[in-house]
Image (cartoon, rainbow, N blue to C red; front, top):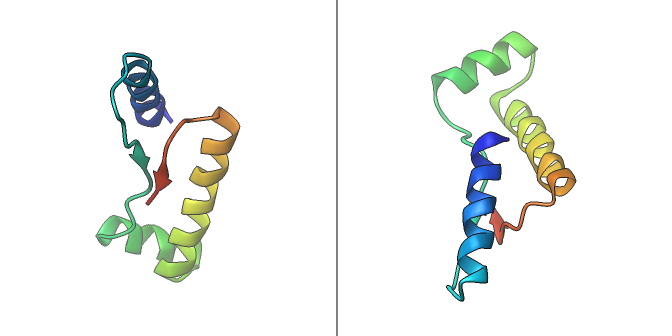
Amino acid sequence: AYTSLACDVMARFMRLNGREVKFLTGTDEHGQKVEKSALNAGLTPQQFTDKTSESFRNLNKYMNYSNDDFI
């Protein structure tokens, strides 16, 4: 949440100063750490990343971040 919050603050500040901003945020869904975490959770890597991604999407809505896209 911290990095998205910091980017949101910067994006809002830049917009207030008249700059064009494209604020993207999202989740990292590759690598051995994800595979290992998925196996430990008893899920496939795709199921695990879908679940994790949904949690972050919900957090973004709750925190009211001004991101333009979620990757």
